[in-house]
Amino acid sequence: MKKYFEFEKLGTNYRREFIGGLTTFLAMAYILAVNPIMLSLEAVPDLPEAMRMDKGAVFVATALAAAVGSLFMGLIARYPIGLAPGMGLNAFFAFTVVLTYGIPWQVGLTGVLFSGIIFIILSLSGLRELIINAIPAQLKYAVGAGIGLFITFLGLQNADIIVGDPNTLVALGDLSAGPTLLAIFGLVVTVIMMVKKVNGAIFYGMIMTTILGMFVKLIDVPTKIVDKVPDVSPTFGAAFDVFFQDPMSLMTTQFLVIVITFLFVDFFDTAGTLVAVATQAGLMKEDKLPRAGRALLADSMATVTGAIFGTSTTTSYVESSAGVAAGARTGFASIVTGLLFILALFFSPLLFIITPAVTAPALIIVGVLMVSALGNIEWTKFEIAIPAFFVIIFMPLSYSIATGIAIGFIFYPITMLLAGRRKEIHPIMYAMFIIFILYFIFIK
Image (cartoon, rainbow, N blue to C red):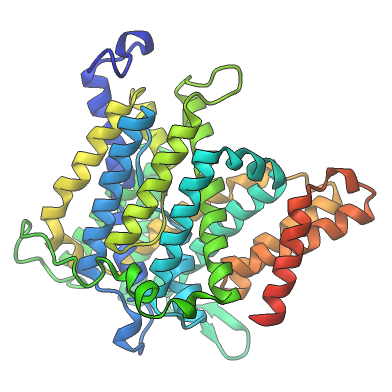
């Protein structure tokens, strides 16, 4: 075991790896509560039950996808990186695919499955480098920042800090309302812990908010803590239903855009996370990431696994940096993280007391972390600033990640051509320009 994970070479040991894996789990554990609430659209009232995914089943799918993905990453790529259903992608799944497009969640899972399969093919073929190099770094940063703003907007809505208004579209909510005050408390304590650099701050913030909620009787006290694993059958295998029953219904431009969006965001989010965490851990060699193909393959296999169980796209988590800071250097830490997610399956009663007011601070803080990419964008160059800004601003304003990407990618070749930078535009960007023009013509 020590030899396989190169403990001696990397200057680590079992204790450091275990603590690192545990720290990563604590930093990621909020997804076990947030993802079921997000995919069940619990914060959206008056929806047909057919549009909502079963919370218990999504909880199991989330834990299993995180466990399998983290184990894959540890065993195959040997990196100290945990995986779980990604924030942003779950928002796109729930609020764009299901709520805005009106597409059944089963079809959405089929889109996740297809994107995972394509990702596997790209990872094995070597085409991933071509695609990564085709998308300018400035737009990659913009996509990450835009998703961060979108997630923050969702969190503010879930907490009723921001509410709808017939005159101004949005307005400040009633900050004296109990659930809103509870969310504000959670946000404040989480911010304090984040500033103090407490590992697992988001997770601990949710725990403290839940305890306070029970004390002031805004949250029901659980009758038990440990219980049998919830039934995953409501979502398990649903990704195959449409494919086998009515495959022609998938032959639409809208479905293609869904698959491309899942693929695109996961593709670059994973690449960015791998580089960031590997750099922090001192694992980069000559500015290159060893075993990058294996890491991308592990990530794509996790996405396919998650889709089969019944959750949105599984991706590498930047919260893994907390585990690295605690000493993790090898894939053994990821194995620890994966096993802890399996253990979490037996604590489902704690899930069902979690409310949107408890998870809202987590969404807001994750959004803050994601918009840090803004600092990498060349705002002084207008040909870059315009498409980047459109990507970022149209995601929350249109309530659609896909729309933000589409508008930004349409403007990028236009502004670059006008700036006389034609040679810097990759042919793939012209192809995306055409695809997204057709997207607005035939879908929007």
